[in-house]
Amino acid sequence: MANDLAIVDVAGVGLNATDTVIRLPHFPAFNSKTKVLSVERCAGGQVASAVVACRRWGLSARYVGSVGDDDAGQFQRRELDKEGVEAHWLVARGARSQFAFVLVDEPTGERTILWGRDPKLTIRPEHLDRRWVERARLLLVDGHDAPAAAQAARWARAAQIPVVADVDNLYSGVEGLLESADYVLASEEFPARLLGEADPLRALPMLARDFGCRLTAVTLGERGALAWDGARFHYAPAFLVDAVDTTGAGDIFHAGYIYGILAGWQTDRCLEFASAAAGLNCTRIGARGGISPVEEILRFAEAAHRRESAYEVGPRGHAAARKP
Ligand SMILES: Nc1ncnc2c1ncn2[C@@H]1O[C@H](COP(=O)(O)OP(=O)(O)O)[C@@H](O)[C@H]1O
Ligand SMILES: [Mg+2]
Image (cartoon, rainbow, N blue to C red; front, side, top):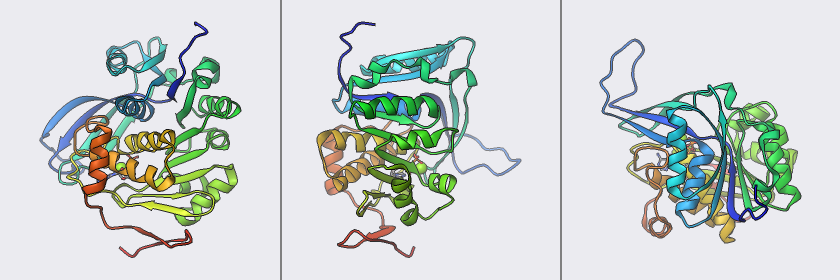
């Protein structure tokens, strides 16, 4: 590899997936038949989708991920090529690329995901080139291949590059990743899985203290996003949108937060932009279907209505859950 690898704004190491998005008039009952409204093949995957959003917003981006030598792998490669993302593919011979069947409930837009990942797709620390990480202004990782993500995060930290971690499940070795992550933006269920503490008001400070993170946050779907910065809570309600498909809301939320970090914004502004970007993404089908231009997201955040707040943050940064 050439020594003149460009410095990009965002480097992402982690998942891509090929989603078959199946829209249904209602979530199916056990042992029933349901006629589908539409079926579409969409590119998804946490890190790949977030990196694509950053690129659409004018940032330069690098992606490192794995695919099988199948048709879906070609599809993933074409999609990132088309977006102008610098991609480094680990191609697993004889493997099926990561896939998901996404059942979308038409009335609410909420998605239920059935997914699979061939073990041959595992990214290992020795697959990574240190320069992929070091030649970037920020690193995004997910927790699926935690040892590789942790390796990338340690390299980033050594080079003083901020690390954003998108964690949802307890993959083995995820603690090692958290130790080197600056911004941990987790799913709602993650703190209970890791710490046995489901209440984010207690879990977010615990997570920050135990792993030395600069910011810990959970996204709560329609109930918004709550963050702890080591001294105070921050909360952003979700925006009121006509949700068609919530697939990728979390991915685009992460992208929005990253955009804010790189723009030098304060926490509240990052959260608001991330929420608006994620909300708009829910108005179209697919994980990347509703990625909107920056100006549109800013206008939307200014003008749109918010859903009812799930938390109230006092003037000194204390937070309390609001009664539903
Ligand atoms: N139905 C919705 N309407 C408006 N915004 C939403 C909706 N679902 C998610 N969001 C926004 O996207 C963010 C991330 O969504 P969430 O559902 O928590 O992530 P995930 O995609 O991992 O399930 C939320 O914090 C919220 O701002
Ligand atoms: Mg969701």
